[in-house]
Picture (cartoon, rainbow, N blue to C red):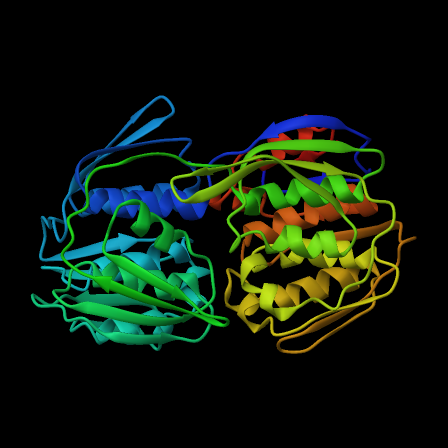
Length: 444
């Protein structure tokens, strides 16, 4: 199997237009809510990555009928609490998808059978106490493996509404509680540290009895349960996290220009663009419009000759949490010292990404100082790599693989990057798109 790639030359100047696959977060949330709707829901541009396929396969195990017709996915919803179980014990394999594994727990607090959730090696290292503990308050019995997978859930016939304070800025924790609240008779109240709000926007779009009061540091969310979900159609906008690799590739390449169409620029996901603009990167929004509660635009990016260092505002962390490996690369080329703080949540991802970000920079010859939650980067605008760099044993973290690909194409050097198939988790066409822009990559 061709599992490694080799890159030994920078990408040449390009001027192109790209269209991305659908947003992964929205693809998974659409599938979960469609499964609880009454009737047939349809989606186009659904991301067909391993995480989304894992989601669909698990829903099928819960009795949900799913069909594909060319670029359209149809889900035949079973209504609230409508999942069916052929066996008294059902095992759901979430693969690498933390989003699915955590969110489905919210819909299983009322499960009539004993549900076991498992995942791959990487997912099995991640913290699930953060979701299991609040969901137990609904009345479900949840057993974890010292806070990790595998997890078993015994649902309750009468889930009760709860009050929950979310302090980590985790959209997954907040969303799991929101989904659980759908099946209660009362009103669930959530005080949540600000984080991605795709679930809130979908609830609003579907008229699901949600009320949100936005305050300076938190959102107060109230949800009245037992509101029927009508089937709905959704064209999934392009993924900002996938677009991020090409934004940075363009910014760090010479004499290049790129347009990316129909990107979701939801303010809770656009931290990358805010941070990069502060660093002098040329990013422009064109044709901005609204769609089903989300904000969409075409992105125009141009090469940036002079990059400014940044003392990154920590209030932007949650809206750029998946993009920091790329932001670190931009900081490596800044003229001065950049600092990033309160990033311990990065180490709760598929791999300890804060530590890996530091490690990759060190391998590139970029001076940096890392602690458990911060990173200081001593940028070098004249950095040109000529040495050999081997990237492996990173728990098959898709974002590390893709981030290193961008580093190789913009900084030079002779790179050997293992675990090419990791990109199937979130962005199967990544290498195809990179090569479309003119990158010379070989794999073996």
